[in-house]
Image (cartoon, rainbow, N blue to C red):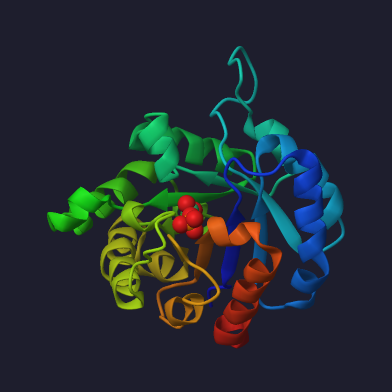
Length: 258
Ligand code: PGA
C-alpha cells in the first residue's frame, strides 16, 4: 500500500525565526496524526531552526533544491551531502525552478540521481502549463517529463521516489485541478509511463502527490481519488491550522489504508 504523504513547500517565505515559530505552531498537532508522512520544506537557511523544532518527532524535513555534486566550486549552491545531515527529502524540478532558473529534464535527472545516491528522497515535480493544457498536450508533456527526469534510474531507485503532479496553471492561482483531472493524469499518464519504464509493480507502488492550490477546503475531494497519494502544498502550508487540517484529512481519507 502507498503511505500518504503531505509536504509543505514554504518556497521563499519565512526568516529563520519566523520558520522556527511556524514549525513550533504545527508540531504538537502534526505529531498526533498517524498514518500520514509529514514533511516540511523550508528555505535552506531555515532548515537548521526547523530541524531543531521537529527533532525527535515523526515530522520530516525537506529542502527545495540541491546541486548535483557532493562538494566543490559551485558558488551559492547546496549539495546533497550537506542536506543529508538535516533533511530526508528534497523537492526537485519544481515548475518555478524550471521557469525562472531554466532547469530542464536532463539537469533535473542529474539532481534526482544525486539525491538518491546520497540517501535523500526526491519529491520530483512534473506538470503542464496553461498553454500546453489548452492545446491538449498534457499527456505528451507530462509523459515526456517523466521519461526525462527518471532516465537511468533502477527499479529500486524509482521505488524511493515521490512524484508531485503539479499543473503549472494551478500553482498559486487558487484554481486547483479538478479531482477527476488530477486522478486521470496520475492514473492514465504518469503510472502507465512508470509501468512502461519500470514495470507495473513499481508503477503501482510509487507515490504521486497532487500540487497546485490545494487547501483544507478542496483536499478531501482530491485525496479521495485512488491515484492521489498526498499533496505538495504551497500557500496553504504557511498557515499552521490549514496545513494541519490537510494532514488530518489525508489521515481520515487514506490513513486506514496506508
Ligand atoms: P500552491 O503551490 O499550493 O501555492 O499552489 C504548490 C507548489 O508550488 O508546490
